[in-house]
Image (cartoon, rainbow, N blue to C red; front, side):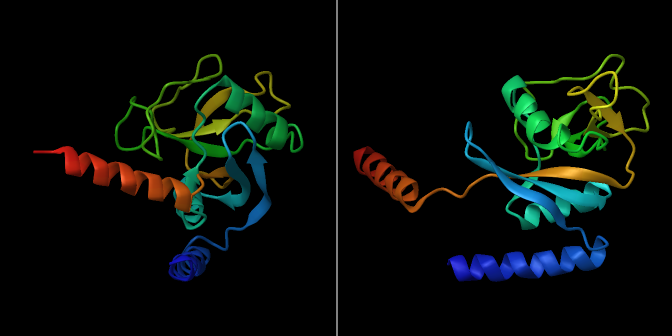
Length: 176
C-alpha cells in the first residue's frame, strides 16, 4: 500500500513540477512537537500551484489553528528568513469576504494585522515579513510569486486504524 501511495505521490510531484514551474522544498521538514505535523518552506510560486505541490507532500498550505502554532511558525520560518512573506492556506477566493482554510478545517483563529484584510482583489493569506511593523501578523495579498509554507498532517498509524476498525465492529455488533 505504501509503495502505491509513494508512486502516486511521485507522479503527482513530477506533474506539479512540470505545470507549476518546478516548485521545490527549500527548507524542511521541520517537525512541530506540539502537534506532530511536519512543515516545509516551498520555493516561490502562485498560491494555487503551491497548494497543488503541498498536496503532493500529503498536506496543504499551512492551516494556523491558534496563537501557539502562529508563534511556532514565526520562530521556525520567519525569524530565520526575515524578508519572507509566505503564503499560508487561508483564502476567500470564490467566496469574497468569507475566509476559509484550504484544508477544510474550521476557521477558529485569525491574526490579521491592522487594517487587514483589505483590497477586494487580494484573496490569499500571507504572513507579514519580520522586517515589517507587524511581524507575526497576517496580510492578504494577490496571487503573486511568493514562498509558501506547507503542512503535512501525518497519516494515521496502523495501530490507530486497527483500533478504529475494532470500534466500528463492536458498534456494528451492538445494533439490533
